[in-house]
Image (cartoon, rainbow over all chains, first blue to last red; front, side):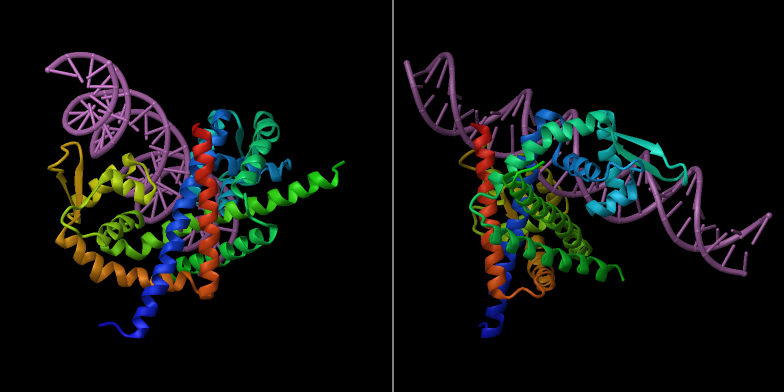
Length: 163
Length: 163
DNA sequence: AAAGTAATGTCAATATACTTACATAAAATC
DNA sequence: GATTTTATGTAAGTATATTGACATTACTTT
């Protein structure tokens, strides 16, 4: 027989279990429907994130693979593959850094920039509008706050484990 | 020059953009740290989800691949691979349905059930506790509500697209 | 009953994601 | 200056995830 304490734990577990299950489902649905929304332009949601990041700083200098990986919170190894596919389609370019021959500077090509501005931005805007249906601005602020908090916790777990 | 309307849209886009980016980061971090937490037991977070689903209904009848796929919101094709790996490690069994020879009934094995109860449940419980640090019960309820709402929207986008 | 349709699970191809391992180049230390 | 350590990007291997295609089986329709 369970005491009140363990019962409360069960309830808390159930709540968090639902939250993380929904998170998992949302992420899958986001990837699936997002890719569906932009697949006519020959890109995926992850490639979208990369193009978006590159569009923010079209400075002459570009950005390195490591910097981009940090920004997107993915491994450098993962980016290598995504960048290769983007490069194969002519959306980005990789050039050796003149100051550090280990490093590669990643740039948006003219084609990539045009695709981003003319096709992807409007498409994403419409997609976000649908996905945020029924969310007030305050709801969105609250949601973002919770996700930020959760991410902090998860990152903390990751760094704890490493030590 | 932008008018007030397009500026508001930019702001809304920025908010939703942050939300979905955080969602993406949270899902990656969940998979990464979650797998890290249970890898000593030879399973991953997805396999965890399958074992958890199976543990809920240890009825004699088991569950079919299609039913499991619906429950977990993943494709049957995806489950085929996950189930194969779980079966290879002896955590689940697949048997032909006596009433429908197309269908396979998926069961937890004794080994799988023991692993779930004795090792995974405590580990997950501790993990959730860390991941929900700083979340009041009301915060968790609110978070779950927002995720439910978002998932509804995303599923709606998916079904719209299909028609 | 026979033919067409739908359901069930699997295989193949593609794209993320991770970790481990490695070649190369830069930085730090002695 | 030579050696060690660190940083950078990539390659290889494993596990998800998707869609498309398929063989097999069940159901529907005629």
